Image (cartoon, rainbow over all chains, first blue to last red; front, side):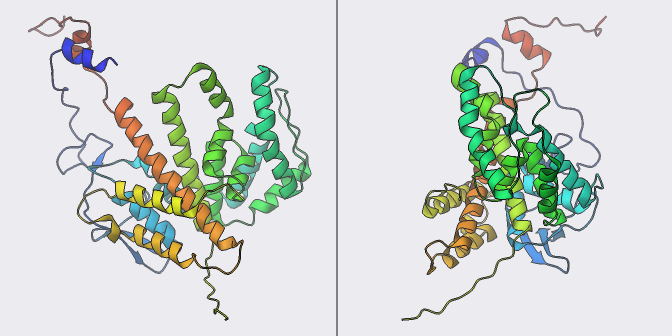
Length: 278
Length: 110
């Protein structure tokens, strides 16, 4: 609304030149922290460890200079599409799958499988869908209607007791519940676990993450349930596009990337051709 | 199972997103490995004798997730460019917003 007024008021001055580029950015100009797209073609090849990404003739490497290999072809294609969809500059913050693969390959925090599982299950104590409010009553009602079914599903699917609570300390999760989840998560491989822990951190809920990994709810629905209170406030007070929609799109992108990553890392596809019998 | 809608809609949405994400307009988006992989996967799973095919639903869920990813990345980038991509204004611009001009100080600031 203010943009046309701004053009009238101030003279059109060009922005002052940003600080000189770092020594690394040799081609043309790009602000430090942004690289120009330096490759024309992105393609995939199969190496010994898995599938690799080729930018022109160069092989993609992780930030710690290891060769970028992924176990699944579909994942390699998705990463290649991410690199291919960069236009003039490379925007790393939009390349969620690449970031996830880099994390899985490098493991910069050097966590073992058990540490990842423990971090994931620890989230259950502060799970979003278990924390209920008492007022305003409309929000309490909304939480009951939307979150109770998913908690009930998780309790039934994993044969555990979770419950919900309105106290500040949160629900009291019995040890048997935690053990069940620990043993369930132990069945995933290291890559998938990195993805699972990522989704849990984004959605702030273990139950919603398991819902989306078990394909019980879609990613959009999980994001909606995770942001239930914000959606309630938006309906009450109005939507601010540059904040609410921005956060919504970012959360959806990250959750979808994590889910796709987990599924592609833990699947094995076989095609059985049945003969038509007539 | 999640409420996913029709596979045809997911496929159409995916192809549309791939068209937007084709980056440098050198090659048409039909040549990209992503397009070919998705179309081949949908075609391979189209015919099944079972009414409730688990692999079909798994693939559809994956396709819907990928569609959500592509769509939200594109929308997020558009919002970023629209609202947060301009960087900070210089002091001259800020002064100009309210009609002032910064004083000329040939000797530099005191």
